[in-house]
Structure formats: C-alpha cells, structure tokens
Length: 285
Image 1 (cartoon, rainbow, N blue to C red):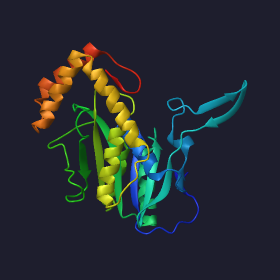
Image 2 (image 1 turned 120 degrees about the horizontal axis):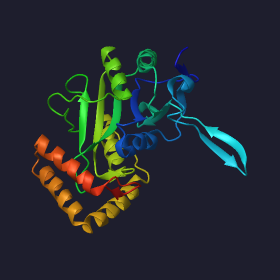
Image 3 (image 1 turned 90 degrees about the vertical axis):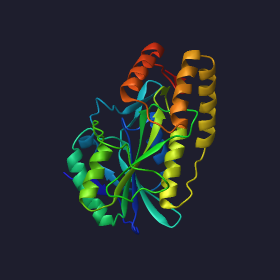
Image 4 (image 1 turned 30 degrees about the vertical axis):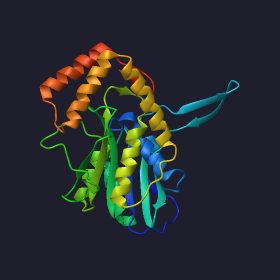
C-alpha cells in the first residue's frame, strides 16, 4: 500500500517544501504554528494513509457529541498543501508526527519530491533551551552541505550532539541522500515556559522569509507574542527566584557565551525541582 497519494493536477515550478510536525521538536508549538500561518487554507497537493501512519490510541481522534448524539470524528491527518510566496511555489508538509513506517514514508516522499521537481527541503522545529524570554529567540540551523543556510543563521551546535531523532530528521537525511538540498531552522524556547510560544513561531517565519527572500505575513502572532511577553514579565517580577534565574540567562546571552555544561545542567535541574511542573499557557515552571 502506498502511503502517499497525489490529489489532482498541479503545475508547480521548482517548489520548496517546508516541513513541520507536531512532535517533541515542536516546543511551544512554534513550528506547527508557523506552518499553519504560512499555508493557511492552501490546496491539498498530497494526502497520506493515516490508518497506517498513526497509533490512534496515542493520537485519538476527536469525537463531537451533540445533545447526546455522536455527531462527527476529527482524525489526525498529515497533508502536503500549496501556497505561493511572491513568485515562488511552496509546499507545506504539516500535521502530527507519524508513529509508524518512517523509512517507508521517507522513501515515498523522495519519489514524490523528484516527481514534483522539488528544489529544496526545509524543516522547521523548536527545542527547549536555557534561554531567557526577555531576549530575541535564537535560531540554530542544520544543512546537508555547507552554505545552504541563509539570513545569518549558523549550523550548530558545534561538535557531536546525540539526541533521539524526530521524523523530520529522517526525512531530511533521506532527501539529502537523494541529492535534494536539505536544511532546517530550529528555534530555541525558554525551557521554563509552558504552553504555546508565538515569539518563536514568528522567528521561524522570519528565518524562512529571509531564506526565501520574501515577506511572510504574521497575522495575529505579533499581538499574541506581546500579550504572552507581558504575562511572563509579570510572573518574573513577582518571584525573586525566577527573576534571579532569568537574569542569569540574560547575562550568558549578553556575553555571547555558552554555560559550562555540568554547571548549567545541575542548575536547570534544581530550578525545575524547586518550581515544579507548571501547566497552561504563559506559565513559568
């Protein structure tokens, strides 16, 4: 069974594919929010076999019950949708991260990318990091060969970083091995913030806009980011321990230095133990 099915006929010219999955590399929902802002209600170019890709016990469909009558189900879906940015065709692959058959999916997407004449493959993501909410959102990059990243974003971090892989990375590697230029932009989210972080979605869209040399409209994200910043500033101001911790992170950013690994890891662990696990949007934990 094929995992990917084309929908209709599409006259595309050297499209760029942008990928963002709702997954563990989507801290603060930044990349999935950016993808939705980017493509909106764009036409579906390709669909995927959800029954094969998803574990419905882990990602249960949403059931609407109206006046005691089960009325409708909303299933997790992965779609490839089309938009245009300036004169450029852009395809956005977004949805929940698949649970199964990553290698088969990667192989089929390579075939689809060749069929559609994809020019480049760009992943968006976001990771929790020891950064303060009071400074611009840092963005790290990955690239399949030197010189692909643009807009002043550098590949990093330096040295070996061994982490559990996300599906976007499996696709990146498959595209690179197939000769399709692959790169990624990853926002760093303050690890002490719980809930959506629109400032990071904005920075990902700006990084993508600089890469493609287009202006991407932010919609209501700027207002959402300002409101959250105000709530976080208030929460920081009323708690001395939180304020001290944020000031320490500010110092490291302002001095453009990385913390000593063991020192900061132990401080982060202590901070999280003392603050506990906060829940909800705009909360500090």
